[in-house]
Length: 286
Image 1: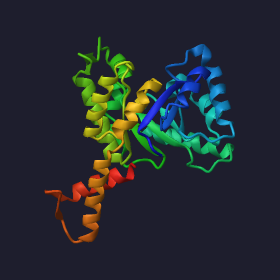
Image 2 (image 1 turned 45 degrees about the horizontal axis):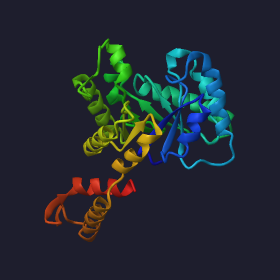
Image 3 (image 1 turned 90 degrees about the horizontal axis):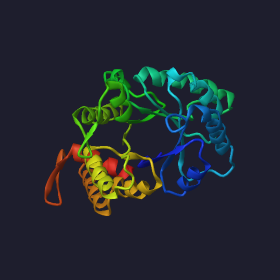
């Protein structure tokens, strides 16, 4: 499952879905949570369920962000959308790996009812939206078999902390950079994909490009988007360049030719096992 770009789509908007499906995003996240008002929750659920019933398989992965456990809406969401065609759910306001286990049990039951192979639907988690969650990030390792990605969010966390703002000069302030880094470490420890959060100003393409380059440099493998115009930039920034691919292949081939070597000289520089692992990850992302 390629997860460079994950585009949010309000679950009750046919118009926004029509544009989103041609955006080039690797995954569409149909939102039943924050972008849908309480009075439209049932309609959004029905709309997403109907999209899953379409016979034509999409070219993107089908995610659904369900409502949080404390809303009383979670089971209704799952009952509507767990059916063939659903690739993953995005769990908001997670408290730690205990929530992954709980959702996995729910999915076991709903998959069985839908005559789907148990384990078909994967789980991605928004792992930093409460203060409590920040102290549970280590719990995701070792990863549950359904867990494929961890991402983070600064808006709900700011609300939970009572912050007056979480950015200064367009950049995250210190507490939210901590949340970002901790999410990255947690994903690395669990061996799942680290997904960076949204950039709200979808008109600032230059800022998005700078942010994506920093993000990929640090180790994130993809990013969430809130507007189709952000997708092309995200896909370009998180995809390895031709030069990176060629360099990775040279490293992998050199170690394959010299299986007993701990270090080798490649392109005038010394490389060792960590470089080999990075090269293998680069090639796996193609």
